[in-house]
Image 1 (cartoon, rainbow, N blue to C red):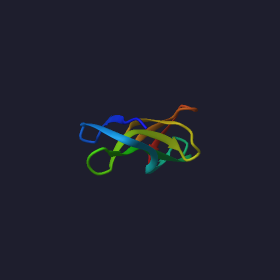
Image 2: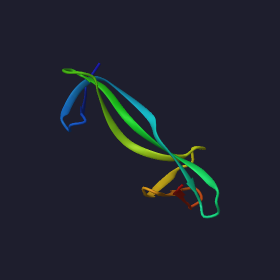
Image 3: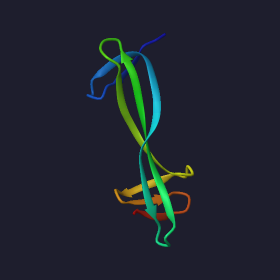
Image 4: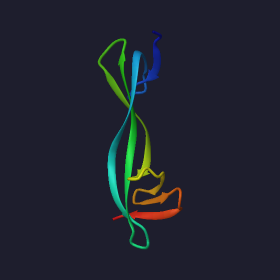
Length: 94
């Protein structure tokens, strides 16, 4: 098996034998559009977990992904405003 080279959460290069990628739900926000329709926006984040050749197991956070409860893609406009990609609907945090 070959080694992997990656940066840890401190920005230092690490060598590892195994890397595990996971995605976790880290936040759910209740939102509403201008017509009063309710939506739940979920924020998911990818994590890389690895065991360096030296030292303890580490976890490095990766990119975040926003989706509605039904899986539809969402873009973040600001911390309280979101845009549903498929419909261009703007929703705000309730």
